[in-house]
Length: 279
Image (cartoon, rainbow, N blue to C red; front, side, top):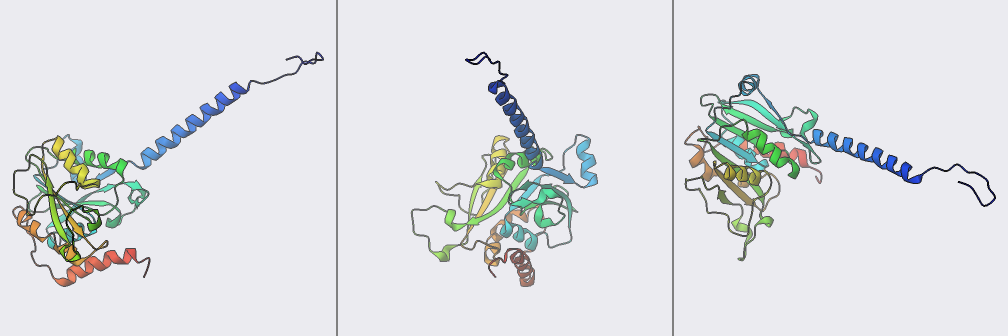
């Protein structure tokens, strides 16, 4: 470019420079996005026996899948079902997110969703999901787990707990009425639930909703029992509110209808130790 006095100046095209910078930024952003997606991926780790079974193109021999979501629901299964020595841990589901570090290789059961199979009846599979599953991981978790299970002649039971503040009703809800159970089931579920149905406009969210939606789409018999409690943390009264479900679970597995108080207190205290920020 020449100036008014005839001096020739070398100039660069700012448009080209900006395009190159933008291209570099897009590639960097894409790489970060891919790394984050890989980090947030749900990973299933099964026992060697089940791994070989799945590699051969087969599915787990499962006719009853029981999923417990939340500390109280998981504690209920630990006290009333898993307390016996008839269960083997056969797998784990790891999912890293902002509220759960289970994808970092931690080995504690509190950091993952642990799967148990009955020794005498391998068709019964239990999963305790204590760790948080983020919203963008729900579909992935559900698809990967149910891809290992047969869809025919499968019954799914989901136990979940949440705060009573999420329960919507036109009537006054006194504190003495909590905790209480509500149910929601898929159209393929033909049995009678142990409690009344969840009233509109209430909804279920999170992993229970993702599992129920999957079962509805694939015509799998499924029921969700949601416990509404006025206690946000682990509570023995909330744990015992799931007891009506034992009448359904007892048909396929052996349950302990009256576990000792020491067992319940041990489960509650072990969870409270991890959340003692204000003690």
